[in-house]
Length: 103
Image 1 (cartoon, rainbow, N blue to C red):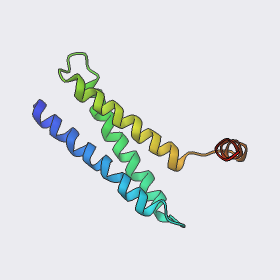
Image 2 (cartoon, one colour):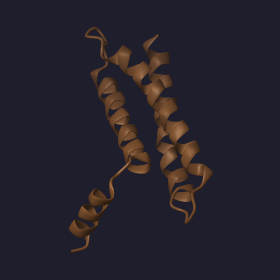
Image 3 (cartoon, rainbow, N blue to C red):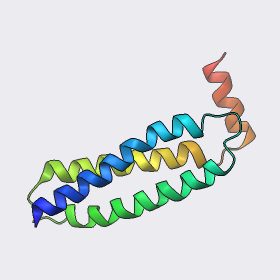
């Protein structure tokens, strides 16, 4: 059973990895339009699957700590993507970041 679970994590992780190339192609465009909503839906769905896997890997008796760490790292990465592409930021926060990056 653990072998099948590892395969499911591998499949999920592969889809998560492929998202980066899609983001570069569609979200970095001048007008990402509908791609932004599609991205939010995909990331939300991948987060849901990841949290399901995390409930398994967080159990004390789960034998593969490296796999558990991989699931946790990917979840943090997906949460960062959601915040990066879809997070709301006030105008003051935007100005502060721009002035810090480009003094």
